[in-house]
Length: 306
Length: 306
Image (cartoon, rainbow over all chains, first blue to last red; front, side, top):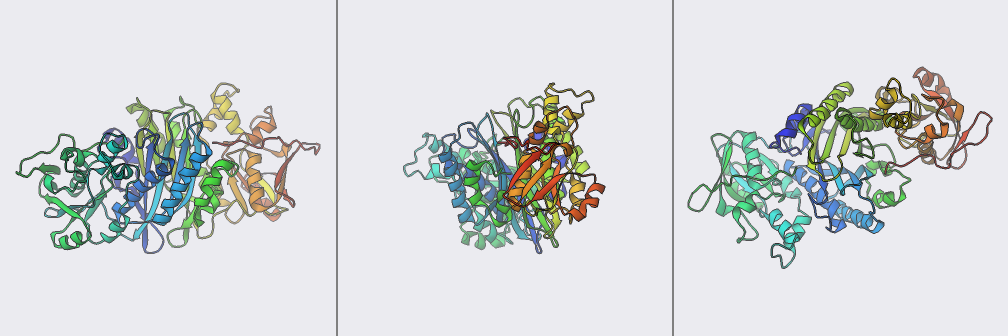
C-alpha cells in the first residue's frame, strides 16, 4: 500500500482512488463480492536488494511477497482466494532458479489454500522485481479497518515484535541466530490468517506491523482520532538484549496490531495476544514509556519501504 | 499473461494455476463476482526500455499499461471495474514527473470509467518498472474465451494491424509520421472496450493482438483445435508501403481478433470489423496467402514480450 507518511506519492495518487480503495490508507481495498461477501484486494511489490537479499534462496523469494500480501488479508480479517503475480527477471535467470521459485509458491499455495489466477513475466536489465495482487473474502461489511480505535481500548499485538529487524541482521550474519530462526522469519514471515479470522467481532481496528510497531500504531491513532500509550516493558520480544527502540520501529514483523474493548481482554489473551498499552483521548500520537513511566519515544517511529 | 509459447516459464507456473485461471492461457482469469456477474482479472508488467521508451512523456507511461490491461478486458467482453498498480521508481524521480504520471492516469480513469483500488510504491536501482492488475465484470458465464473457434468461422479484426510496429519506429524517428498519429498509437494504444461489449453473443473466441496478428491467431487455432487461412491483401493496414509480414507479426496492436459464424458477418461489418480469412478443419496452424494464393507465411509468427 502507499504509506500515508510518504507524502510525495500519496499526494499524487490518493486523488485517483475510488470508493473501494478506502483512501489508499487501509491494508487493502474492499469491493462487493459474491452473495454475502466482500472482496478484499491488496498489492505489494518487492525489489531484490531492497526487500530481500539477492542471494536469498529462490524458493523463499516469491513466498515472501505472497506472505506479505497474505498478512494484509489477515489484518482485514479476510480469508485468501487467489493472487496474480508479475515477475521481471534479470538476464541469466535459469531453469533451476525458476523451478525452485515456483516450488516455493506451490508449497505456500497448499499451506494457505489459494491459487495463482494470472500474471505476467517480463525481462529487465535491472534487479529481480516482483509484484503481487492478492484477493481475499470477508462477510459483507465484515472487513476490519484501520479506523475504529476508541479512547479506553486496549492495544494488543500478536507474536513477538522486532523479529523483522533482528532477522535481517541475522540473515546478514550481524546478529546471533544459533538455530536460524530469526533469519528464517526474515525470509518467510508468518501471516496471521487464522488469528485475523478469529478477531472478527473482537478487533475494532487492526493492521499488520510492516513499517514498525510505533509507526503502524500511529496509523491506528490517526484513523481513529485518538492517542496511544505503550509500555516498553510489555512489548513481546525474541531477544531481550536488543534495544527496544529498534525492535519497536524496525518493521517487517507482519504481526497483527489491534484495538479491542477492555471487556474483550479475556478473548484476546486466549488468542495468545499481548496487551502493550492503551488508547486514550487527545491528539493522534504515540508515546512509549519505560518502567519508570518516563517518555522514551524515539524521534523516528518507523520507516518507509519506499 | 504468461505466453503459452514461452515454455520455460509456462512449464513452471501453469501447474500453480487454479480453476479460475483458465490454464493461464487466456487473456484474463474469471472468478465468481457479485450476483449475476463474473469478475475478470488480468495482470501485466512493463519495464522502461523494453515496453516503453525511457523518455516517453510521463503522462503516457502509466496510461499505456492501464490501456494494455483494459485491452485484455475488451478481449473477454468485460467492462472495467478498477485496478491496482505497483510502481518501482528509479532514484531521482521528481515531483513534476509523478504529477504528470498521475495526471495521465486520472485522464484515463475518467475516460474508461474506473478507479485505482490500491497499490504500492517502492524504489529500485534499476529501470522504472510498473505492474498493474485490472478487474472487470461480465454477466455470469459471459466471458469470451480464446477457445471456441470452429472450422468455417470467419476471422475478423478491428482497426488496423501493424500500428504497434509502425508506431515504435515512428516514435524512434525511423518511420515517416507527419501528423504523429503512429507514435501516439505506440504510446497510447486504444483498448476496444465498447467493441468488446458489443461482441458479446457474436464472437465465439476472441483475444487482443499483442504478440503479433499471426501468432495470436495461432493461439485461437490451438485453443479451438482448428486451422486458419489469412489473405494478406485483406489485412487492414495504416501504411500500404510497409512489409505485410512485419505488420502481421509485429505485435502491440491491441486490436481485437475473433472468430464469428458466417451468419454473423453483417453484424461484424456493422461494427466496423474487417474479415481477413477463415478457420478450417485440420491441425492447428496459420497460413498467410498472397493475392495469387501462394503461401507467404513468415517463419516467425510474432514475438514474445518476455
